[in-house]
Image 1 (tube, rainbow, N blue to C red):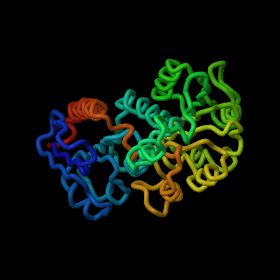
Image 2 (cartoon, rainbow, N blue to C red):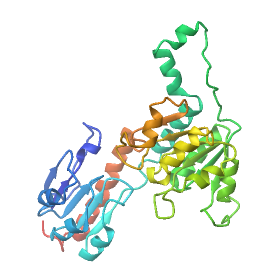
Image 3 (cartoon, helix red, strand yellow):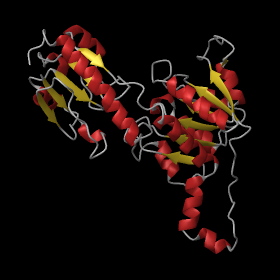
Image 4 (cartoon, rainbow, N blue to C red):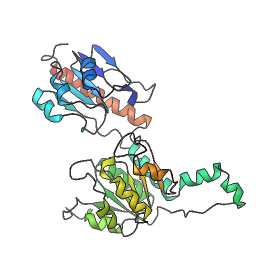
Amino acid sequence: MKAVFLDRGTFLEGLALPKPQGIDEYQTFDETPQDDQLIIERCQGAQIIFTNKVKISAEVIAALPDLKLIQLTATGMNNVDADACKKQGVELYNVAGYAVKSVPEHTFMLMLAALRSGVHYHNKVIDGSWEASGNFSLMDVPLIDLEDTTLGIIGVGTIGKRVTEIAKAFGMTVLWAEYQGQAPRNDEYTDFDTVLETSDVISLHCPLTEKTAHLINADTLAKMSKKPLVVNVARGGIVDSKAMVEALEQGQVLGYATDVFEQEPTTQEDPLWQLGQKNHPRLIFSPHNAWASKAAQQKLWDILTEQVSEFITTHKHSVSS
């Protein structure tokens, strides 16, 4: 059976990614430009495509009659036309559960760095500001502890629950937000607006859907009466970047710590990027790598290898190699 990996370069260089059992012909590309014709050319004759961020359109799927499986090397499935897969009889798999340690730890890295102005103070040491002050300690921006604060979690899946465990170890009170506009399903959940109104930190862990697109917008930001820090390790499109910048500039929120952006990689046109040039002490970015600890990437590939090998075994009588 033939498989093509369109963007191997999205994994760490040197990380062992052995081909799944049952693949006889295997071709990898570090990256593949978003060009349907090129994608079709590279995948001709393949029964399996591996892709992380390369989008697979209905036109590509229709042009590959041998294709039986598109295996995403990620959890999100927005970059493949699922309806076209169903129409053509192509299976669509993702990988889940691999970043249950990496993403929560990254969440607290961002949270702590923003609350304690880590980047701001690092720069003050490097640029000579601390030396110039003549003081043994520099404290021009207040440091904020996690203990005795309230964390509101929007998106209570496996990662949200792990964030809950870590938060409680820090001495935080945790609120799980119910879906917007719905009554809490049980005593473990809190009304969405109440979470916005009472949280010192709000952490986003929900998927990007029609209902969550720009969930954090001018209206919801206005309800954040405690002026919280907002942390986003979910998807960039959940937050309206322009509204967030306005909220930061007007002091409606304390800060914004994000691993994700509406367009990735982000560009100089992004209002968040522009605000970042002004060195806001509680604005911190990372380049969509919360998922990507070495251990998480290895676990992802282990899960992928197992499910692809199982697919091949199940379909070996109906798919010619």
